[in-house]
Image (tube, rainbow, N blue to C red):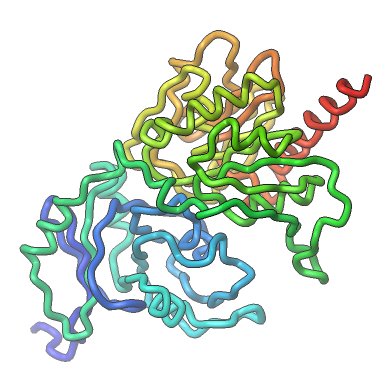
Amino acid sequence: MPHTNAPRPTACLALADGTLFYGRGFGATGETQAELCFNTAMTGYQEIMTDPSYAGQVVTFTFPHVGNVGVNPDDDETADPVAAGMVVKWDPTEPSNWRAAEHLTTWLEKRGRIAIGGVDTRRLTRAIRQQGAPHVALAHNPDGVFDIAALVARARAFPGLKGLDLAKDVTCAQSYRWDEMRWAWPQGYTRLADPKFKVVAVDYGAKRNILRCLASVGCDVTVLPATATAEDVMAHNPDGVFLSNGPGDPAATGAYAVPMIQGVLQHDLPVFGICLGHQMLALALGAETIKMNHGHHGANHPVKDLETGKVEITSMNHGFAVDSQTLPKGVLETHVSLFDGSNCGIRMADRPVFSVQYHPEASPGPQDSFYLFERFAAHMAERAENRVG
């Protein structure tokens, strides 16, 4: 016989093909629509939810213990959550961590983000892998009343990320300076006291920890909006230029980003890009990008450095990739994913210009990829020595 005392579902996840997942809602009430992805990381749910690269996406967490360490202001990658919502297997428990300042449920509710628990995330993840990232509508109603036809229609109405420029929605409104360095025990975050390089970081959705890593290798960082021109960048007389991570279709953002990057490259400056910044650099150099079936989202992705033979354990979050078959002459592929062979890094053969698809600041290795920030600093130091010489 059916269990008549089972609580009524208070949340519903509707896929565009009509598939429905019911569960228990937490966080904010209401509805949202987005692309659905899954993330396999065992830690960092707060960083994931506040990563601007997740704009336009609902995140399914494959690790069940989401919420177990609460949230705290130090772990935000930007001021508020950017991901549209979250899907988890188990409801968040009471936080058990000395750094916890707030319960995940309360944090989501205050910031207007919807979440659903009690979902078979294995089944959902298999569906995403087999069918590609679906368009979904997520609803949370404490009364448990849902207009299913309207939810499915809303999922089907979502335009998708292809052709969508989201960088303009998450970039900074105006320029600002950054000098905070990486967290270290016992001081926490400290300020850069003796900067060695002036760096302009173009913000397509920059994570705070990327900026901290730049400061930690001696960079006095000026952050500019995504729509900055080459003239805007060069007005700061930088020693190097950094291209940040971000969301959306790189080809759409490239409409204004590519001319800027091409203009900067005429000045022979060191350039370093991460994630969307990697894709922007590739487009500026003449390559193309493609939409992936379900993307790479997690903190356990092995990437091989083709020039050293070393393998790094990396953090990834991208639904588009650079098509390595379109790299022009003089642009070398430097890193590849060991999961599917997709491109994860490029460099110019004769200039200090390079980028990677993954997130070296996220430290899943934990220090496997920090050398990339040190390489950027070394390029700027070498350029300064050559100019003096």
